[in-house]
Amino acid sequence: MAQDLPIACSLSAPDLEERLAEMAVLGDEALIDRRIDGTHAQLRFATGVGVRDRVAAIAAAESSCCAFLTLRVTGGLDVVVLDVDASEGAGPALAEWVEAFDADPALASREEPGGDQRFAHRSSRHLNAH
Image (cartoon, rainbow, N blue to C red; front, side):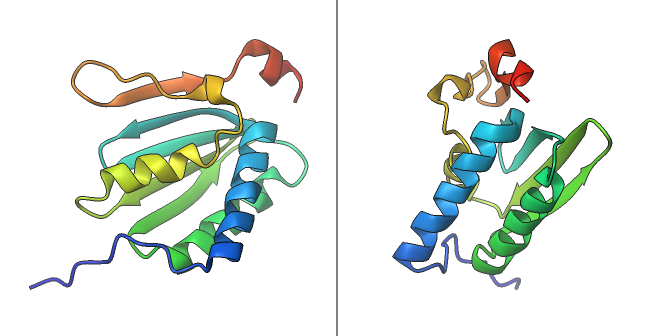
């Protein structure tokens, strides 16, 4: 029988607050769009100075404190992609985790019929600022 991973973060309250702030700043500065479908999420960030390194640093840090998440950073010249898979039953926790990147409430995902959340996009004003 496979051992279930706890759906919990091991960070202390002050460290969690700092991490959430870091994620919100990165989201505000570079998040283009995101998609959540059950236990999978994909976040796409505009490339810029240090963005790939910041996304990779958050992915590595979150991998160590949130064992129920599997994070992969990919992308090319125009976009940095963060794919996140959550363990079975962790869909709500994944959605909450993705929302940590939302310094801008206008980016809140739209729920589609059938339950999955399709890509939510930043306004063109925000994208043109990067």
